[in-house]
Amino acid sequence: MRITLWGTRGSLAVPEAKTARYGGDTSCVEVRGSDGTVLVLDAGTGIRQLNASLPKALKRIDVLLTHLHMDHIQGLGFFRPLYDPMREVHLWGPPSLTLDLRTRLRRYLSPPLFPVYLHELPCKLQLHEVPGADFEVGEFHVSSELVCHPGPTVGFRISSADGTLAYLPDHEPALGIDFPLSGNWTSGYSVAADVDVLIHDAQYTAEEYPEHVGWGHSSLQHALEFAALARVKHLVPFHHDPAHNDEDLDRLMAVAIAAAKPAFIVIPGTEGTTFELADGVVQVFPAEGGKAIQEYNNLTLKLVVPVMYRLNQS
Amino acid sequence: VVAGGLANAHHDSGEVQGPFFEGLEQRRDSATMSQKPIEMILIRQLASSLSMPMLIVGPDGTLVFYNEPIEYYLGRRFEETGELPADVWRTIWMPSDENGVPIPLEEQPITVAFRDQRPVHRRLWTHKLDDHISWLAEVTCFPLMGQGKRHLGAAVIAWPIEERRG
Image (tube, rainbow over all chains, first blue to last red; front, side, top):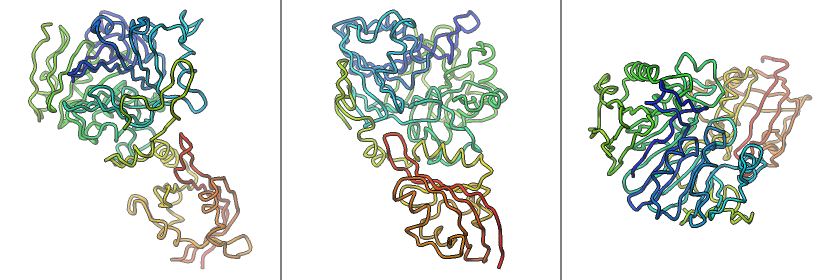
């Protein structure tokens, strides 16, 4: 299972020099199987970069939308496979209590917000609503669960013979409680429990969170606590606040990790980073210019799994 | 598990191949982890924040949560008891109408809300059997219907009016 972070920013794209390393594009993650299956997690502006990496021979692509906030669907209209009549594109996402997924997506994929209507897309398009029964795409087994975030929002749990990934980019499990409670009373727990890699919302600092309670996001500290509760092996803090630049995020990560002393590896979510997950072991290939994972985790001296690290030369 | 990912599929023609949430219960039952449905988690969060006495009953009648304001009336603390089975928590009180006539189990507001899946509001006395304290209260019970019209249980909110001892 090869996981690539194409967009890591939350709320709003911030294409600035000061955010270049963590990334300015909004949520988009590619998950590629050893059999060539491609899952795309969310369709934020990061999906534009994904376009170039897709194999031309790929006939089927599945896009899994956690929810329909703009930072998670803005790139959809720019996803090239949607304009290829030879491609089969499956869009998975939540309906609301009164509107089906198609109707909700039409709100964006229609004028005046976008010049192309959903029904005009030439690809072989199929829509699927989640949460529902677990499903399989190629080598991947996918489950989804509603999670705590304004509006219908799901988290995805993706498993293959290589390992398990949980994706909870927008998630506020600490809302209104003395966090953390036990796992069975914690939003997202069944999605994340015991996974090899958890990609999780870490939008705010602990100081910022009280001003944003109910907005549907976590502090970095909450992400660390949630990951500990779920016994994950690797945490990827994600959905960075647009107000936090690279320097801020380096500092915030270092301080939070030093304070939490997690018994798992924290891999700050930086745009372009790729993970290779095989047999439960994760190799990390940071984007060029990325910081070594050890630089963060040596603070805690709690590396429980050897991380094989090298710069991605490709 | 639905092979090929065709569960709940819509074709672009608008045809619906499967209902929303089809298989949800099967998926929950087969899950190895017993996380509560998100709707239950959210209502517990709400109850934890309210100053009104409130309790939440799960789909099997278990008292899955009660908030701090109702702990006084139960004489128990949730942190100490955790969840309480129906045959335990329903014997803490004996409800009666405003005239002191006991209300049969099948007519009690929580039973009606649970069984008929409709809200019930009633003024009643609750007699706490272990220390003989009684409260007159307005009680509202309502069913908890989750997404996909799943019956998740019921919630009770009480507005105490008067307390009597002995």
